[in-house]
Length: 191
Image 1: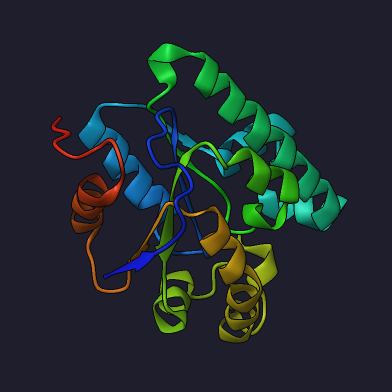
Image 2: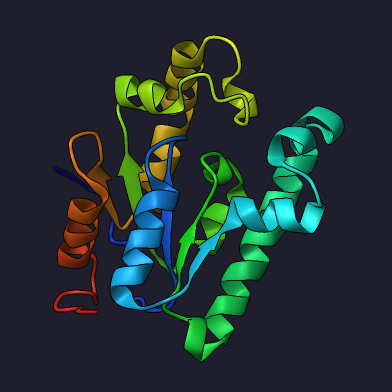
């Protein structure tokens, strides 16, 4: 059900950050958790698209992955800083893109925050993604690309996570309950 991780983010307040592979449920669970806690939900991928004026798939196609990763790093670090500085928004739920943890500056920036790693199996992720062409790193052999990405990124997710939760056999509401039960500082949260 849950995967023990390090002691990062223990006792931290401020934004709660969700990380995980593509289709692990970061946006869905993030919105549900934010609604349950009565706080804002911030999707970094949506912010990147808004600021760039085009979809992520188009950024990859026209500008390349390095440009996207630079935008992702800058947007993530700036957003976390802004949320931490604004007391009213400090409890926000922030969803990062699946590859955000490949950025060392992002991993470093996540150190003081409570980070939830939403884990998903290959079969469940492939089923959820289907033939979604909006995910540029997963074009072609979706299952093969997922296996490669997950092998590369799993140690990085583990590095930044306060807690890890398997999502394959849980509905979003169940995951919200588990996060509230297991994440430091949320026990007893009602909304």
